[in-house]
Length: 374
Figure 1 (cartoon, one colour):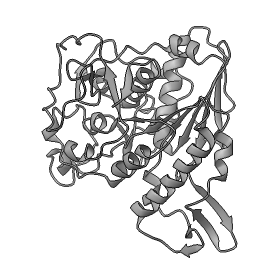
Figure 2 (cartoon, one colour; figure 1 turned 45 degrees about the vertical axis):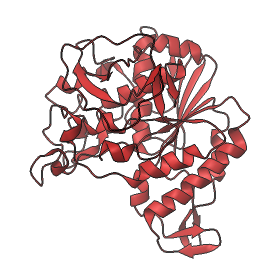
Figure 3 (spheres, one colour; figure 1 turned 135 degrees about the vertical axis):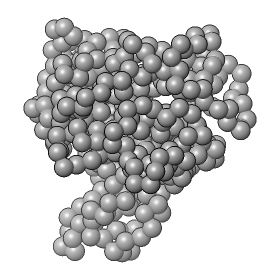
Figure 4 (cartoon, one colour; figure 1 turned 90 degrees about the vertical axis):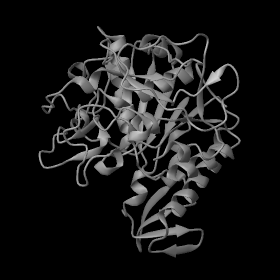
């Protein structure tokens, strides 16, 4: 996905408020090329622009000591031999900087609150990463309540409670956000229905994500208003579903203190030609990030423009976690065959620990006021 395409819409997007220039990194993968766009307002900059730098203080936790990582993301447990992918930190372009993640500070901020992650398995990737980051910060002696054994698939609502802080984190599987119901005609994807949203109303913080499943036909019919069809343009269907979600948020959350985030597009690395590798090459065997913007040749994803357009028209402020470009550079971060499935090759999901930890650094920065919209 080309950066100029990613930035084609003027929308709500996160930027860093900078108090001082960031220190130059000694081990930078490569500087990000200047983008051809208007400069942000004075005193702000774009944290999604930057590069991956080697930082020996990373990873932020030892995944072998985290009880919340399912087998699908547990690359170290399933024998990934290289470890360099764990030692990269996202460095925004000067003069931007990101705060160091402080899990104890976040738990104190969230004391007595409920944080809900809603969406598909890439939302789970971020959810379980955050659980590990918080668990490492609260340990030793962290008291947690976990209703499901580690490694099992998420149920209707997977929940972890950090007892010493009264903080509850929940994951609700909802890959389309709108409802899928079983009727006599079969499974119906209802583009204008969000009855399941009532489960999310008690959350103080919502992290939402959706897109991948819209390309997977797991329904028999799509219902658009009173019209029932076998299928339709998936981008159009996604746009209609997003509008339904936006109306639900504005109707139910606009007068509340609930903070809402939308997870930006997380790329796959199935096509090596997108980063200059031979045709047929995938993420398998990759051990280093891409080194600059020009190295990535993927086409823009229509989901990005849809999300940005919808968020821009909402009454309730929704923070877009703009993780796309930084993740595009991380062809080395996927689970590939180290996901508990000896016959699988996964270039969509990410190792935990790994890239999703940086998504949560963005989340933390926004929550402590070091990311804002422009």
